[in-house]
Image 1 (spheres, rainbow, N blue to C red):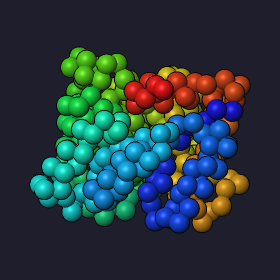
Image 2: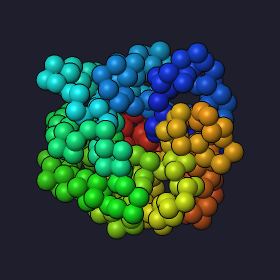
Image 3: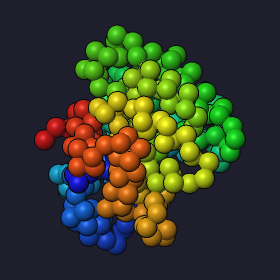
Length: 273
């Protein structure tokens, strides 16, 4: 089965000693495309360095909502400059996290708006993290409002992105109608090992709704280990577990789905090789 991992933090400390071996194991498992998203300035720079070193790794640049309150103008200008690098195929990881709430909501919203504007300016999709507290959906609702306000499905956005998705919901979590509204705005959706956790049953329904050209899978390494993977450290090679789950939900042949995943990755990030 051919595979992609649309979200794996290979530049994290968990891989400092053996990132080469981890990437080699992923390649042997069938992973042909991998995106190592940044979550702050240092990790965004590290993402670009990884993409320079490993041809099958792509980079992104952005500020996670957890770090939104730490961003000053100099940091944002550095992120915006880095985002223009040709090795950077996406903006983020950004978004909203009202569960842990490490940054005030207003700081998160400002941070999100900056990323959406930068993504539209550069014609690069924005990687979106979105979490509410258990049983709530305020982060998802606020995210949808911000996407609509940014006019991500407007003619200008479609032109700048040349028909590619304006954003990607990473590690999908939320109610079915949230997924439906995101799809109506043209977003891509990625599923991770989170789908196997209690309370995430709606992901199975949404996985059946996503058009093949906008369906992605990921590990969110070193987090969110799926069944069978070590809980202490998830790795890109374990993305196959989630990919096979997605094939099962869609009633698809796993090998055929693998081909679709590669096409969707390249269609989302403009990375055809």
